[in-house]
Amino acid sequence: MRILLYVFACSLIASPLPGQSVYKPKLVNSKDGAHHDFPMGVLEATGRLKDGEKEILVMDVGKGGAAETAGLKVGDRLMMIEGKTPDAFSKKTDTGLEGPQALLGNSLDRKSASSKPLLSLRIRRDSGQVNLTIDLPKSSSFSLSRPLACPKRKYYLSEIADHLVEVQEQNGRWKPGVGGDADVYTTAFCGLVLLANNDPAHLSSIKRGIEFVKKASIDSIDPDDPKVGPKNWQTAANGILLGEYQLATGDKTYFEDLKACCDLLTKRVTEKGTMGHHYSIPYSGGGLIVINVQAHLAWALAEKCGYPIDEKAWNNSASEVRKSLDPKTGALGYSSRATWSPDIAARTGAMATALSVAGRDKKFTSSLADALVRLNGRMRHAHAMSSIGLIFGFSGIKVGSPRRYSEVMETWMPYLELSRLPRGGAAFFGGKRNIGGDQYLGLASIGNASVGMILASAQNRLFMHGGTRKGWFGKAN
Image (cartoon, rainbow, N blue to C red; front, top):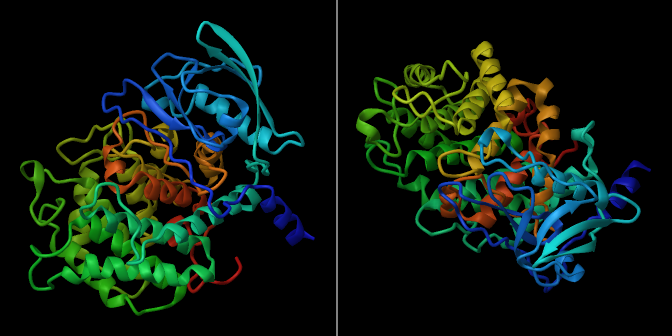
């Protein structure tokens, strides 16, 4: 009976049909935060908000979608949603999704699960007002009280994974935004989503992704010369993917590649503990903590696979990480020279996750997670991007503050709903300021990866989400 109910719930969520296009929001990046563009979920439209506004300005409407079918037009302003006037939007990062986004996301979730999935809007159009009723694609509702058992959450992750398989390129990569070497980093996170979804039918796609990062990145490592090889952020992401893959499947085929990645990261830690994009240390030797923490997570996962951590490198790097701690927020800053930074989630979350996986310094892990919980509104902001703040922010909270995890997930439910497309998985939903880094990685690919990893954090499979069981891939929880 439970299986039948689950299948029924899944059938209520629209699936892509042959020939149907996937809606891509028309997002204009605003580096100074003058405006914030975002997807409007299953409406298949793009909204814009400015500081202090209560009305969502419609910037784009997808052809054939629910919004266009109901008569929503570019230039319309959403005055009221389900009879309610939204609170004002604020461009301050700490306010998170408060205001029109929260009201629209919560309304979409609730109404799409009702017996009559109709969303009522009052629109300001030109000099007048119009009432619209939008027929929504039917779905179940997110279960906020039982996040681990929510059919919608599970199906959403599966739909994202299926879409990633569909759009994976023949060489195994997922398309980046501007070419260059972004495809390796993007592919690593897309591969993690497929792994976390736990569908044996996707194993060949996961392996193709691994083979791509191996050929495009790992094979360039020279074990005798740390000045040669991929950038550190690539290398760490590769190590995270390979570590989780071996732990999930028991397949040790890529252990030597995992070892090569971790050895390279070890050799690139200076005596002071600093790390940079590559071998050299930027910012007059100040370094980048966001590199250190991802290296720690790769090392911690590799240790679970049988890799002996270089304690000197770990300790030197960990010392530099601690020196970057901002005493006012309890979160990690740019570097030991620049401890204050508003975009704290990627650094703080990745280090909390690494320490938890390694079973080290539980007190520090807990304090970092507490900072993430208190400042969770900032999770969409990390180094001119949103993706890694969300990916590592949620993993850090899950492993470091599990009792508060459901509370934070409830706060972020509107984000999941506004990212959800009726077909094609998830749309990219960025931060309130510069998203140039995500554009570099590829909005469609990294958007699905980000939302997929948030959803996967509820599954307890990946070690970076609190998993403790090896060889779980292809088996029931």
